[in-house]
Length: 137
Image (tube, rainbow, N blue to C red; front, side, top):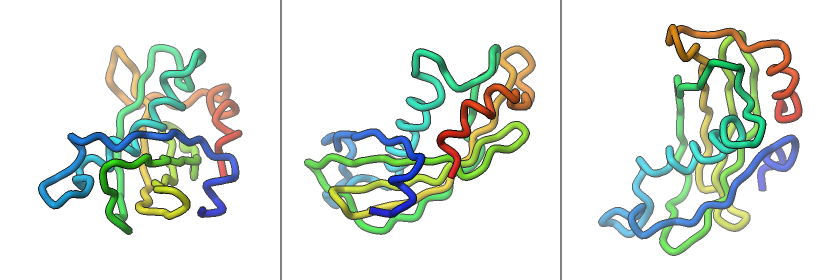
């Protein structure tokens, strides 16, 4: 495993679903984004105490995916992430997908915090930045 994915990281194990497979017998490239989205949402939004400021939400601003090896069905994928950078209004993640001990894909993604009412960028509060620090590498 990539040493970075064992330090200050968050991960989730995902089942490869039959519907994820394309006509060539491997996971369709578009599905990789779902595999990367799952731990981001779990970490930031679906905990008992979400890592987002009051009256705000996140949108995906950018994702860059490198496809290293195909993923087949049936399988389990471990989706890792850690925070690469905390900006004024954004969070950048380094992410990777593993099948067993083998990295099959890596990505860099950035989310931006928006105000629910205005839909404009909203600066991350100092309290939120401090709560995100355990995942910063």
